[in-house]
Each structure stands twice: as structure tokens, then as C-alpha cells.
Length: 229
Image (spheres, rainbow, N blue to C red):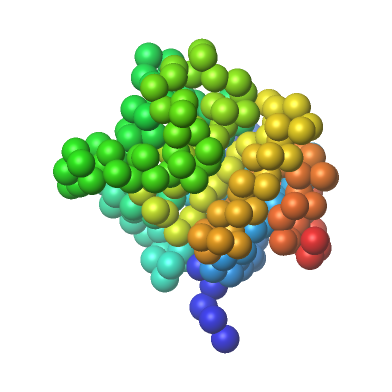
């Protein structure tokens, strides 16, 4: 049996607000296979974004293990975790998070500036991922000159440029109209089936979740059920 890319066990996370302890995630157990597309669903406050942040190494759990590619990321130091994120995770956000003063090309190149790649190697990679998302002719355009769908494609290219095994997407279609959102979901599907990427996506939209291979539902910090699309 193939070892899963993500293996989460006995995971719990909480916060203290106003002197009161609030449990956000309680005893989560979850496995995600290599090349799987998983949607995390649940009402606001269910813990799905917190779980996504833990999987991405943005936050640390209070207890439990998160193994990704055989690495227990919960045990890493902050510096080690930053290096691990840069090498292993691509991020896609609802509001794109593009720098307005940079062109599409330069926004995509940003993660590569932390690597040892030469300028020519960086430019080759950026050109390749912009071609993949269909934006070769928009490389020199700034975010303000791009539609919402085009900006999200730039964000997807930026997530891909370091060739990460894992892509985490937080409401990637939440700011898009239905047609444009479908185009973005089709692109994500292409990344899974043609490039073998693993995607974990938070969404409120059942139609978006249905494009994933599996849906995981959270209620008040507890994983309540899973469904295969």
C-alpha cells in the first residue's frame, strides 16, 4: 500500500481568548494520498482554515502529528518550517495576494528568489508555468491590468513555480464569478491529473467541492464525515 503524502493523527489546536480556552480542532485523524484532490468543507468556525494552515506549516498544533512526505512538520523549528514550506508547499488564496507594483512575471518569480537558481533558470521556470496557465501574453501586465480570473491564474503559476508536491488553496474561487471559477477549478484538476500534484482546498461552495476527488467535512473542530466525489 502506498504511503500517503499527508498523515495526520490525534491533532488538536485551540486558542485562548479573554482568558477562555477555545478548542478549534479536536483529535483529527486524516490521510491524503499522493496526487489526491481533497476539499475541506464546513460552516464558518468549523476549523477548516485552521486545519489548512496546519497542513501548510503556517501554524503549529497543540498536540498530535502532521507528517507530510514522511516529515513530522509539527516538530520542526520556525526556521526549519520556513525552509520546508518554501520547498514543499504552494499557496493559492481567495484574494490572490499579488503585489500590485510587480508584473505577472515578477509576481510568479518571487518564490524562486529564495532559491539558488540562476536568473536564466528562474526565467525559464516562470515562462513555463505562465504558459501552463495560459498567460504567456500577460507576463508583463500588472495585477490592476488583469481580470480576477487572470490574477488567480497568476497566483496558481506562483504556487507551481517551485514545483511543490503539495498545493493548499483557501477559497480559490470565492472572489470569482461562476464561469471563471469553473475555469480555475478545471486548471486545478489538470494539476492533479496531469502533473500529479496533491491539492487540499478549503471551500464553502458545494459545486467547487464536487470537483475534488474527496470531500472532508468539519463541524465544530471535529471531522464528522468524508465523501468521495
